[in-house]
Length: 156
Length: 152
Image (cartoon, each protein chain N blue to C red):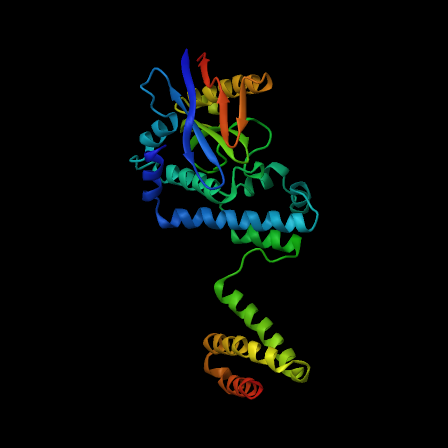
C-alpha cells in the first residue's frame, strides 16, 4: 500500500505541473526522486535532460496540448521516444499535467522493465482513482488548480 | 516548487535544447500546414504509407526527423517545412525587390508624404540586399538608391 498526494510542482506560462508525494516518505516529490536518480548518471543523464527540456518547452510555450501526447489513454509516459527513460504522467487539460515517477525502460514491454514498472502501475492506478473522483465531483479543477481530496491509497 | 527540475534545466547541453526546439518547430509546421489544408494526421499517414500512430509520434515535439523524412513530407504536402537563415534572407530580398520595382514604377501614384515615409524602408531593403548579395550587384544597388534619393 502506498499513500500518494497530488501537490503543485511547477507553474509555467502555459501549463502548471503537479507531482505526487509519498506521504510516508517525508514528502519527497516523486518527480524529484526520478530526477535525482538520473541527473548524475552518465548512462541516462542526456535522456533525463531531453525529458526536462521537453517538459519545460510545453510548460513555457505551448501548453500540454493533446496532440503532443498519445490520445488513447489518460495515464501515459511522456512522449519522448527513443529515450531510455520513462516519466509517467496524467494529462488533465492543456494547462494541467500531473507528473509521476519513472525509471529506465530496459525492455519492449514495460512489464518487463523492473525499474519503470512500479511507477507505471502507480500512475495507472492513481489515474483511475482520480478519474472516479472527478466524475463524482470529489475533485474539481479551476484556474489550473486541483481542489478536493488529493490523497490516494494505492495497492502495489 | 521544484528546485531539482530547475537545476536539471540549467545543466541541459545546448544541443539538446536545440534538438527539442527544432523538433517542436517541425512538428508545429506540419500541424499548421495540415490544418490550413483541411487535412488530418490520418491523411498524412495515408499519403506517406505510414500508420497514423507513427505520424502521431512524429508530431510530439521529440521526434528526430531525418532530412529524408522531412523531404518526403514536404513532397506529399507540396509545401516547404524547413528553411535556413540564408534561404529566408534570399526569399525576403526577392520579395522586397519586387515591392521596390512596383514602388518605382508607380512613383506618380504616391503622394509626397507617402514617398517620404517609404524612402527609409527602401533604403533599408537596399542595404540588406547589399549585405547579402555583396559586390556583384553593387552597381544596381547604387542606381536603386539614387532613384529613391530622387523620390525623397
